Image 1: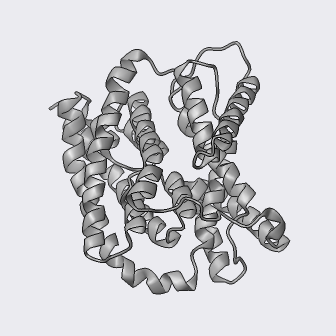
Image 2: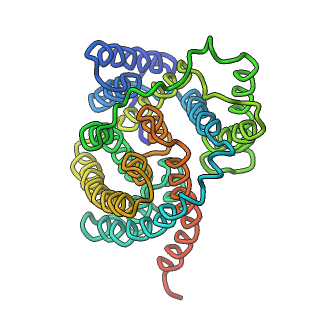
Length: 354
């Protein structure tokens, strides 16, 4: 991701980002808008980025904030969830078909309609994690800047529109308590959550686990939850902090975007969201009609947004968190496993003969 040239130090730029994000949060809170700790920072940082204000992402702090959501999901993995897994298998089985159709439609869309090269077209089409798709796409010879902007656009639009569909399309109130206050969570469990977040994140990164900042803490916390050592999600304050840094991260991704990139790359990302939305709506309707799950859970399970962002929406919508995350993990695993295979095929086809 390109950065703006600024005489300000990284610390000052991050302080500026934090101040703008806090103002955005306060404004959304004062106007009683939904999810002020997510959308306030996101809107403020997006406007600042497009205005070429020298803001800067929070780096490791933002990655650390994502561990909170990993712990939240891990805490929801209980023996009762395992009892529900057979019920989920029908809708989970639709995920590979969903991914296959996305590839069949998305790759030609970027290749033929927008003129991107083959590696960029494939990794732009795949609804995997933003960082993962940029890394894999770059290694395969794709354009990292285009991939980053396209996926940031996908996440931005889906995260913005999903609450509207949930509220007005499905009648879901985004007012579910996100967690108990920190004063009500036993100190021993708080200590275990902090340890699970740190060990899961750093340990996962050391062994090369994809999405280590979320999946590592998720795995460690799930073990603690199944062992009966953790009985609650992270406290409300921690989840609000995670929302804040996720919102900042989405907005900061558009830092330094040029008019040419807006006209081609971002426009391609916006158009592709429409394609993804139609596919997701079709699978949501199919799974709902088959009685595989409730409409809110099904919508969130097939919404091709970021895993962290969908976790936040599932929590505030009061959806079955285990159901939603099982589907997103299946999607991410399929995309990640397929990425190096497809990269090898692309490299072989792009080699000059002889």
